[in-house]
Image 1 (cartoon, rainbow, N blue to C red):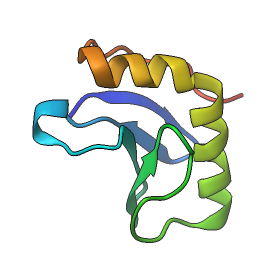
Image 2 (image 1 turned 180 degrees about the vertical axis):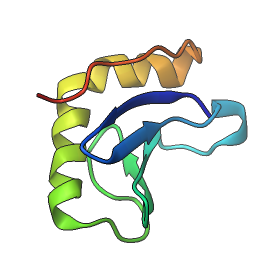
Image 3 (image 1 turned 45 degrees about the vertical axis):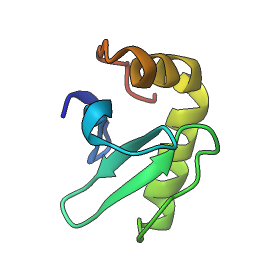
Length: 84
């Protein structure tokens, strides 16, 4: 499970595709929550994530959608810069 980025108490990870399911997604993790977010739509796929943190994750996905989809397809992970 490579860590893609971490910012404002949120850790963004992507599990290895061979062990995951479609649609392409990331997991956003805080001390108390872990939720999958669709890379294509930016929406929470299951569970709950705090509203302010959800908006930050959506902004992150919007900024890096192309890179995240490429990582999902190729399994060539790299760190991305945090939101400012």
